[in-house]
Image (cartoon, rainbow, N blue to C red; front, side, top):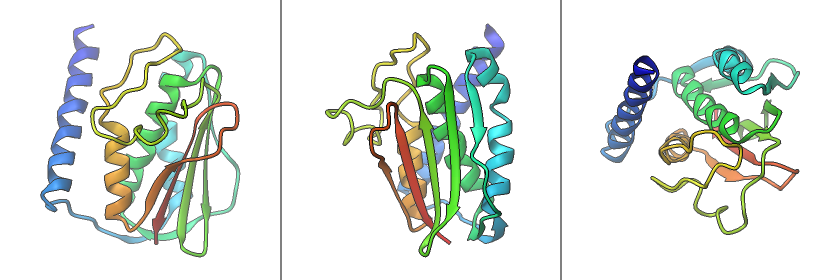
Length: 176
C-alpha cells in the first residue's frame, strides 16, 4: 500500500511540476521524425497490467504507421494521461486509435464507461476538475486531462470530447 501511494504521489508531484512549467513557458519540446503509432503502442503496453487488474480489455486499433514530426516523450505523456483516465472509467474496454490527417496526428481514446455528462463536457479539461467515477475506482486528481490540453496546445493542437458513442471519446489533434 505504501509503495502504491508513494507512486501515486510521485506522479501527482510530477504532473504539478509539468503544469507549472507549461504555465511558465519553460517546457521544452524536442520534435523529430517519429512513427506516432509506435509511440502509442509502446505507451499503451505499459498500461496492460493495470487493465488486467481492472478486468478491462485495452487495445490499440490496427492501422498503418503514422509518420509525424513530434516530441515522442510528450506524445507518450498525452497517451498515458488519456489511457489512465479511460481505465478509471471503463467497464470492459478501452480503444486507442492514432491516424495521420492532413493537419497532423489524431489520437482517439474511447472507453465503454458511463460517458461524460453534458454538464461536464466543457469542464473535463479544467485543472482540478474530476467527474465522479461510476466504476467504483479511485477518482483522479483533475490534473491529467488539464496536462493533455496544455501539451496539445503547446504542440500546436487541440483536445476535445468527441461524440457520445456509449462511453467517453477524447480526441487530441496535434500538428506534425
